[in-house]
Image (tube, rainbow, N blue to C red; front, side, top):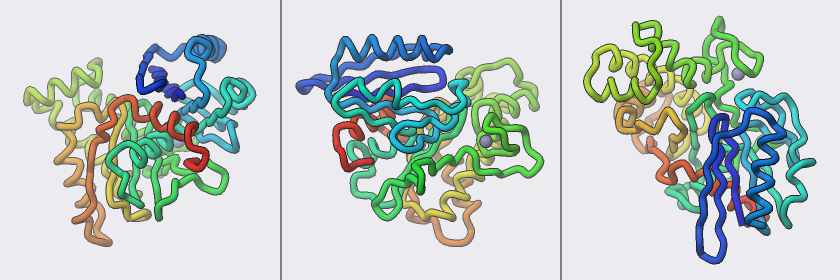
Length: 287
Ligand SMILES: [Zn+2]
């Protein structure tokens, strides 16, 4: 069985066979045809019986990708392409896959209400409420990055304005950096500066952490989860975020006590999404 995580920049293929695990990582090709070729080659080599494919897009039905701006797509019927590649194929949203991985193989096994929030180019979400995967009526729910937090904000890749990911995704993070005189640095470099005590980089983290907290606080007020699992490229430097982010989120939620809310970093690492896709394909009743 296999799970594939097609990300905006990186793709990760995970194969589990006879107790062995194999991982292949490559840069996501910009062209759709090249991406399909690369995936097909891997699937033909590995011949999985069950195959899960996770995409950074709302997924309707068994495989209509509604919009994947971070892959440069408009609507695409991906089932048409991938549907026949294995005995059972599941196509799902990437952070929904991460939530499945957390529930079946991670730290959320005993939780009935939790959220996964992955921050990179965009912000993806997934989670469980009342013990059930949150999918929405049409399978497109939990597009947390597109909650609107700024009425006159920046245009978003989705077509709306002021979405949370325009402030708290990678572009938002770099925009704050530029505004305080740290333009031209990459996120890892900026995190390194913050770790070394650079006051501007610390100011950047301070402002940015609050932008992240706004969107999370909204979700906490709506869904009252017992835990939030963060992941994604920008959260790799979790040690810098852990305490201040937890503090900001709690300060922003006033309506009820968040004493029992756990703010965590996923321990599944960069395999979480591919693992969740694999689990979704393996077990018919997961999704
Ligand atoms: Zn948007």
